[in-house]
Image (cartoon, rainbow, N blue to C red; front, side, top):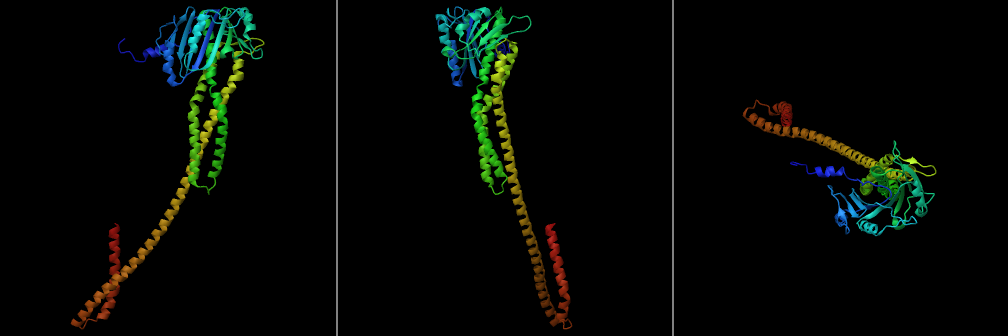
Length: 427
C-alpha cells in the first residue's frame, strides 16, 4: 500500500498478541515468565529463533511475538512484555506416568530443554495439567501431593450456559521449582478452554510481577522511619533562632536528596505494581469464579494474600510521597526564615542609611550656612576696600557707615544667590 504509516503493521500486530491455540483435554501446558535485563533482549531474540531440530517457526507480524511447532504435538508461543518475557509450551497429551506423576516423553524433554535454555531469570514456572473431567482429576490426586490446608479449588468461566472448568492448586513448588495447576475441563474445549486457562495463567503471571515491589516496600520501611525522625529533628531546629541558616540548609538539602534518590529507585517498581494489580483484578473478574464447598477459591486466595501485599506497597508509596511533601514544606519554611532574616537586615541597613543621610543633610545645611558667612565676609571685605578708596576721593562718603548699611544687604544677596543656584542644580 502506498503512503502506509510506518507503525501500522506494529499497531495491528499488537491486537493479535497473547493469542493461544485451541486446547482440548487431555493436554499439558508449561509456561515460563522471565525477567530480563536490557542487554539480554538481543540474545533472547536469537535464542527464540534458534529452534531445536524439527522445529518450525510460524508467521509473525510483530517482533515481540513468536510462535511455531517444536515437534509433533508440541507448539510454542513466545511474547515479550515491557520487563518480562513469556514462553508457553502446549502439549496435546497429558505428560504423566501410570502413577500420575509428571513424566515428559523424549520429545517433550527436548522442548522443555529448549525453553529452559532461554536467557533471563525465571519469575514463574508453572505446569498446567488438563484432564477431561473431575473424575479423571481425582484419579491423579494421590500423585499431585497437594497440601490439604493450602489447597485452592473453584470453578472458572461460570457465566450463562457455559460449562465451568474446575481448577486445583496449592501454589507450592514441585520438583524443579515448578508450580502445578490441575484443570478439569468438564466439557469445555477449543477456544473457551483456551481462554479460561490463559486468563488463569495471566492472573498468576501478573500477580507475581505485582509482588516484585513487596520486598522493596518491606526493606524500605525502616529507612522511611529514619528519614521521618530526621525530618522531625530538623523541623525543631528550624524553629530555634540560634541555629545557623547555612547548617540547616545543608541538612535539609541532604534529606531532600535522599528522598529524591529513594523515589528514583522505587517509583517505577511501585507504579508498575499498581498497574499489574489492576490487571489482576480484571483477570479475576473475567474468570467468573464460583467457589467450591470446603475449599477457598482463587478470589479468596487473592483477597487474603495478594491484596494486603498491594496495600503495603501502596502505603509505602503514599508515605514516601508524604515525606517528600513535608520536606518541601520544611524547605519553604526555611526559605521564609532566611528571607525574613534578610528583610530584617535590609531594614536595619535602610535605617542606618537613613540616619547617615540625615546626618549628611544636617552637615550639608551647616556647610551651606558657613558658606554664606564666608562668602558674605569676603564680599563685605571687597566692598570695604572699594568704600575706603571712594572715601579718599570723595570725603563726603562715610565708609564705615556705608559698609554697615551694605552688610545686611550683602548677606541677604549671598543667601538668595546660593539658594537660587542650589534650586537650579536640583531642578
